[in-house]
Length: 502
Picture (tube, helix red, strand yellow):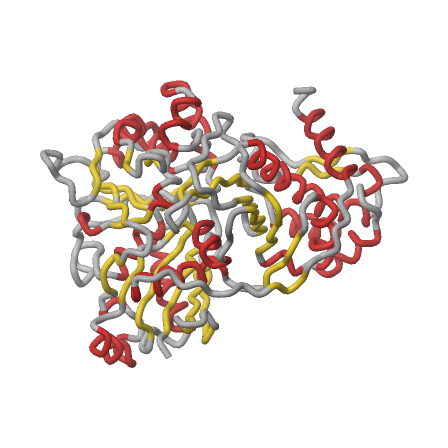
């Protein structure tokens, strides 16, 4: 049996999933935590990857590995390969002013045409601009800008800071894939190339793609973008935590542990689920995402939908909310119940929660772009202020925010015939039932799984064999269709009032 490994280096943790390359059947897995926060030093991710590989029993019998990771995180390296500052993550909203500045300088329509997106605080370009404006001494030392999965892949292949990595700080070996590059704000899904003028506008310094020096030896290095299914090389045995426990034997037998190109997390999930046209995925994690695969690039000048590339050669229009599963955790804490208790309370209340609406902008919001907004409860009266109504309003408000993202995809012509609901929170019975009342599509719940890591494993098998595997996705539940328009109607009314009638 040939084994492949997929890694999901997410905001909260690192997961390693080892699968049978022929069938996609899981064999074993491992996990390690990441620190909380909106800026994290990448060394934490490297240590967690090592711990998660150990927890999964090592890679001694694995033939290929690929890493998917949280998008947009800004990893700044100097010429010695050292990290210059903690990485600003996707959920760090301090660069909202920088995003507005880039829009003013370029124009929203032109930016969307050139990159498929309109800048918001989540995207890498805005974080680069923030560093230029607030930490000029660091900006002057930047020799390369990478993303989380780029950097981890580079380290796994043996590269890194001088004196602490087997192969040293060869920045020309930085590599990425089209899905992650498309979330930077300086790469075009339509042309398949970096928009170096936009990067220069962000940092105030010229850049080039790794391996393309051409008279720009002093320019900032951006990772080389590899084709779907490509190999980034091989893992360096000295970087594997189990190198003395079988990894060397696997490497000598197979010519080394191949390393796939990697992906952004949502593109990895799309690969892992094997979605096709007409499928819309709603993922409820730290953030909420709504995405679909498309044959053609998507451009939304409002910025609601980002027209990313996918990891399979197509496109991945996506809308993202900053507030998802943690909304439920916050309300559960307020009501002094666990998740099961929150579900029981919510199901005691009627659809529409007696008119109570939670607008769940606990951490600001990205869709719509309101980085400084706060959460608010609407429609409370003596009669409606019950624990059940508040619990249900948490589910309804979170899901209505995601439903708005699905509506935005439809407005761009993205076909929507079936909704796949994924993420750790979707096993909650209240979430499943209420989702079928919020969304006007048939809802299906795939079997629980680490779909981002599974998508990375698809890449690993693809890099190993040259063929993209077609693994089946099993379904766990199909909630009965029960669309209740009142939920969305009162949510939109509350949002309208919150914005002062705009």
